[in-house]
Length: 637
Image (cartoon, one colour):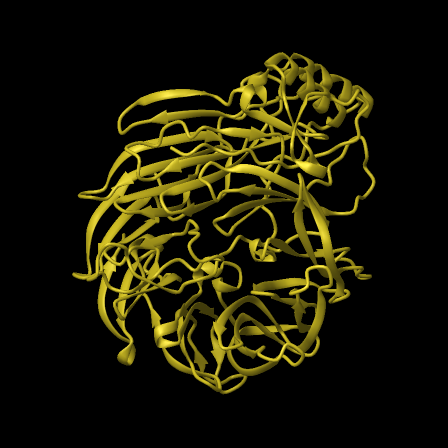
């Protein structure tokens, strides 16, 4: 089992207490410090919490999910290793080739594995029949249950579950601890025969994200403190409330801050514990409001084991990995709650780099950039440099001060130092999509029109905008299609910026100075999950096929008072030609009893041996590309 790594993040607050001391761990500008002993750890944690606590408690809690979902994006042709007869298949659409990301469905060409509504299901694409079913959350229904995703390696599936809240308060008269959002569950399932659980791991907190390279899965967990602050009379002053809250902090133990975990085999608990204080570090300045833990598991091992948790007093929102290095970014937008410093602060994003090339991760450097990220696609490493696209300023008030930029960082000792930047993109707008392809970055901003910027990053010290294309609407996801082409999925819009429905665009970016849109397909009143989750996007190069889920409300076909086209929920398949798109067809799914007989939205698409498979909560459908005829329907309910 690979060793876990420590992730740094800074939840800094001005402190009235003396700055804590300790032995330095190389981490650069956002320097990490380890603790000399458990007693020293508790002293420093209490001091940081005392300085940061306000009249209503410590920190905003981590119930808030960051704006803009995480995403992925390389669904190239794959072939399972070790079997010449294994059919070609599409994997999850991920950011970096060779670095897998958790999703609702996985395939290795021999099987399709899904998780939904508490049940793991295995389908044989050759016979087009369900071959396995395992209930992991029997109480789940369409309105409840644990949100889950999958990673797959050989005959093992790792199911990542975001569970409900842990008990909120055990002390009468105390308010619930705001930071503890629940327990993340990791369930290892053997698929060699009938699916069976071979191990389970539970840890306090929420899963931020995960990445897999080969058999190694790295899971990032964010946990809140367990402090339970008293409910106080309304007539108390803020100073009195803070004093009472500091009294709680002064009595707290390490158990109130450090995550607890439990390890199970198929039937019983085989180990449990709390992250040891010798496995914990902190930034030079921190608030003790939350911790970040990274676990590493070998999916080829007989059991999950303890995961070797390593923890940092930090936050993390965005995970990016190219296989050789892992980055965790801590977006500061939600950290507006500050007792000691209520004035507005400039938003920044803190970034931590880890070397994962040699197996055991090693912390390398840390740095920060102005602004906030939209998702992991705003991060990309190329030729030893990290490129970061962010938006700064106010994007929601009438007098918008926002603009965007691309920053180039490089590790210099323990610091991610800025070596170049280009700013001033999309003034008054915010970023909607980013894609880096080699030495070029593409940035989409939007308010009323969609500027698509091309940024030349080949000289890291002197990045520059080479071209700009202004069109109505915007792309929320960009996908490289080779030969100087980009596919964009987003929304069309009027001249005033009013969105009118899904659009799929084809851009010619071969000439960086003159990007052009050469084709567009519009779905009136449509919306696609691929706009917010690129895992829903499929591009299949052998057939030059683009497949996206589309939800479309009813449309007047003959104007007001005329006939109406019924609503549509399914996938749209477009074939990419030299000059644009042609419609290959559409697929929808029948309803399910669990949904009251209503048609269920299609969430994902796969290609296996020339057959298009589509997934909804109701089931899997196999469709022949020729004529888009149905080959099989495999219900999952």
